Length: 105
Image (cartoon, rainbow, N blue to C red; front, side, top):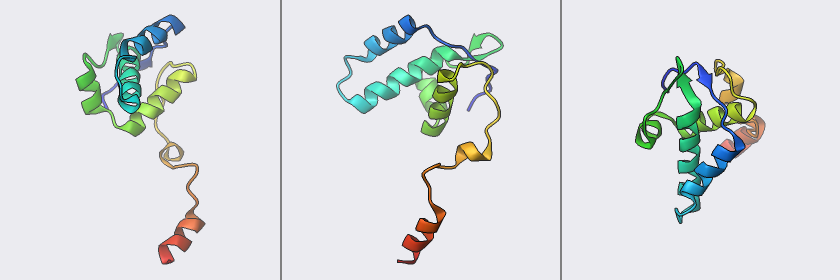
């Protein structure tokens, strides 16, 4: 993931525009992915400038987990992206005891 120092919030109107731009894409998963990457293209900044110049750049650079983390931070108000913590890397639904039981089966 490229370096960024700001997640700039978008207005509700701009979010709606981005959603409408992708509305014609038939596959719902592709539509959501492209809408989200367009949001991040506008939100991710470094020294006041956009980090990504195209959808392809952003898609080639960001993993699904990174996109989710950035979008979550953006929904919580944006600002400077903080350092990733080990807790953010873990799945909160993961049950290690159950995993050990299933692993032994």
